[in-house]
Image 1 (spheres, rainbow, N blue to C red):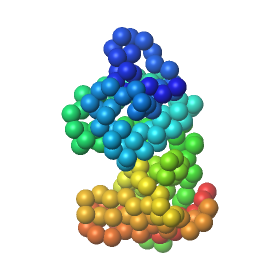
Image 2 (image 1 turned 180 degrees about the vertical axis):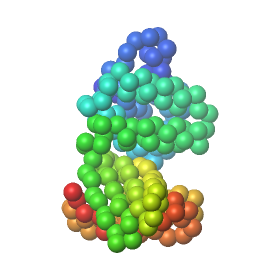
Image 3 (image 1 turned 90 degrees about the vertical axis):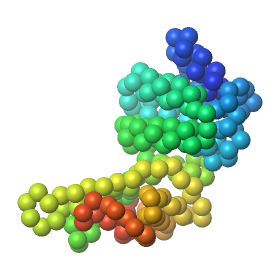
Length: 207
């Protein structure tokens, strides 16, 4: 079952618990301004489909009431948006929350990297779903000397095209290339202001 986000918001306001399947938007039933903006934007509509898949996975392993409550707050936020920038920020915030849930982590595929310079990286891929992948990329750097440990990471939902995906943070770009089912190559370019010593570059292999 799929209903419009505006209809879901009215269910929430009325105090009725929405069904699990109500995470996705149904453009045939869209009535609010935010519904229409999402339905007219292909990238947001694809991200909404990804959100539905992430939400369903989260419910399988986590506190369902907590996940539903957070999803309801997110729906209310989206419905309060008056422009696409606000909607995109709301989706990004919810993606960051839901990617860290036990259900999504267990449904993702993990790849790891251990570099000679002290970096230990992790790449987690959920999907693809409608041509998108949800990516968590992180690394911990352990340098010389006691207490010289730094960490950094980035999360995003991005298109996967011909085994290639790109993430960005400011003027920094991270390129992900799937070499085979068990291996990804990650490169970075531009002004990447990561934590001291941290890099994401290298070959990540399936655990």
